[in-house]
Amino acid sequence: MALSRVCWARAALWGAAVTPGPYVTRKLQLARPRAGLAWGAPRLFDLPCRSSNLHLSPKADVKSLISYVVTKTKVINGKYHRFLGRHFPRFYVLYTIFMKGLQMFWADAKKARRIKTYMWKHNVKFHQLSYREMEHLRQFRRDVTKCLFLGIISIPPFANYLVFLLMYLFPRQLLIQHFWTPKQQIDFLDIYHALRKQSHPEILGYLERVIPLVSDAGLRWHMTELCTKIQHGTHPAIHDILALRECFSNHPLGMNQLHALQMKALSRAMLLTPYLPSFLLRHRLKTHTTVIHQLDRALAKLGIGHLTPQEVKSKLSCPSCYTTWSCFPSTTPAQGAE
Image (cartoon, rainbow, N blue to C red):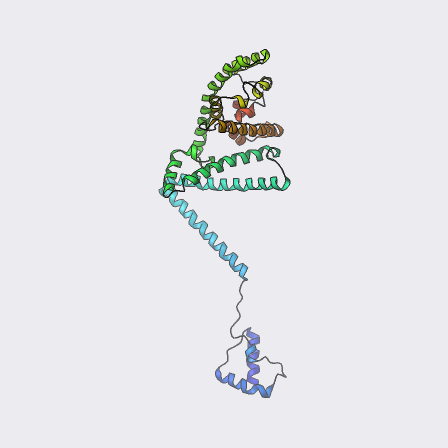
């Protein structure tokens, strides 16, 4: 009994039980019926068999493991970037642009999802959004269309290798703006401006040919003056355009009265593909001009002075820039770019 009390006292002082030998265990088992539990000593099988160690909770262990993995991943990623930058500098530039482009595209997708969720919850239509939200959704839809096209042509076996080659050779047509280099963004902006500029003489020629078909003499005179101003490089004022609204609403310049060649010229001016059947060209022009009109109204509500320099550049590079700038007769695209 005395030996049992000594073992229990040592366990209480050290915080752990001392595993007794076979002799001690046997003596304790023989002495237990006589001693009883009157003195309050614990039984042998109630004492812990090992020293108790302090452990963190399972959640803390998982968090520490995740933190360790993330830290190691960042270190390895940094070493990999330095290796590419030293040994493959040109490839490293493309790799960096690609990774940043993925991050920007993912951020655009999350923002578009938030806007669509807001529209669904509050029953808001597209034309009721702010200018920046409308422009973001419009551009994101165009980007998704390009990505879907690349995904479709990558479906056949081994076609992905051809897709990579096509993306390298034709980045302007197949890649979205997030994956362009800074030099490509400037060069492609000049290319888009040149493409629109090439279609302007053809559009003016069609306008001059339909002037005799206008029944009202005053509208014919306004149409002639407008064409003369544009040919001399003068930016038309908004009242000059609104005076000819009837000509573009009905015959001969209404959307339903346009010929296929006229619609192709307008499609090239808006950076839309002209290689479609006439009914698809007409439907696409109607949809596109409706969106442009909604953007113009939202921009007029916002105020041109609230646009950031980046938004001004992107506005000049999009097909709706000339229509939007026409809402502000005192401002030309060149002045806005400055």
